Amino acid sequence: MSRIGLSTYAFFWRMSSQVPNPLSLAQMLEQTAALDVSVFQICDYPAIESWTDAQLQELRQQADALGITIELGTRGLGTEHLQRYLHMARILDARVVRSMFYTASHRPSLEEAAQLIEAILPQYARQQVRLCLETYEQVKTADMMSVINQFPSPWLGVCLDPANCVAGLELPEQVIANTAARVGNLHIKDFAFSRRDGWVGFTYAGCLMGEGLLDYDRMIASVRPAEKGINQIVEHWLPWQEEADLTCQREAEWTLRTVEFLRSKQAQE
Picture 1: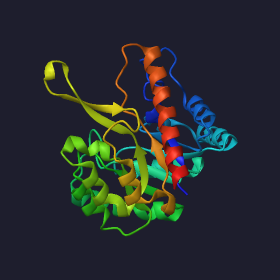
Picture 2 (picture 1 turned 135 degrees about the vertical axis):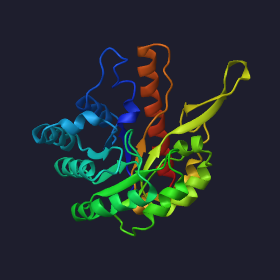
Picture 3 (picture 1 turned 90 degrees about the vertical axis):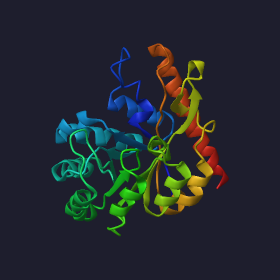
Picture 4 (picture 1 turned 120 degrees about the horizontal axis):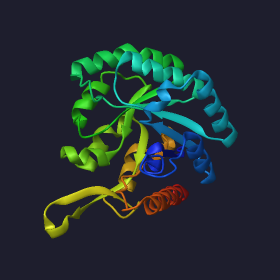
C-alpha cells in the first residue's frame, strides 16, 4: 500500500519566522490529521535533534492518537548523526529516514560516501528502518546510484524527487528511470519554468499540482509505489506571495490540491 503524507516542506512558510505565528510540529500534525492524511515526514527540521526522549515520546503519543505515522528527514552521512536519527526513529516508531550525501560542511567523495553507508547500514537493517538518499542537483544521479547499488540491502534506497535534479541539467524522466528500482520514498511536488520580466532568463519554481512538468503517471508506472508500499510525501516550492496571510493561504490551497490529486490517482488504480 502507498500512503499519502505531508512533509514539513508542505508547511514551509507557515512554520517559518516570516509569519506572525509559526506552526509547531504539534500543530502541523493536527493539520495533517484534519486532511485525513496518515503520514507526516519531519524533514530538515534540525531543532528536533536537540529534543529530549520525553519530548519525542510526547510527539509520538500525539501522532499515535491522531493515527499518523512519522517519518524523519535530515542531511548528511555522518555516522554519529545518522545514529542520532536512528535513536529518534526508535522513539517515534519511524520506519524511514531520508538523507542526502552532503551537508553544508561535509561533501564526501563517492568512495567516502560508500564507506559511511557501509558503517551505518547494519544498524538501520537491525532496527528495520529504511535509509533513503534523495536525488538532488549536487550529486549526479548516476554517481549516487553507483554508490547505492554497491549495497543490495532493502534497508537502503532512494528518496525520489525528480524536480531537484533539473538544476543539475538532468531530465526528470532520466532520473526516474535511473532510480526506479531502488526507490523507497517519494517526494511529490510539481514544478515549472516561467519567463522573467523582460524575458531576461527564467524562474524555476513550484506550481499547482498537475499544471507543471512533473510526469506523475510515468513516475508511478516506473516506481510502482502501491505494489512496493512506498509512501508519497507532499512538498512545495511555493514562492513568497508578497505578504504572510496570502502566502499561508496559498500554501494550504496547494497542499489540499496535491492531496486531492493523489487521491484521485489512487482511486483510478
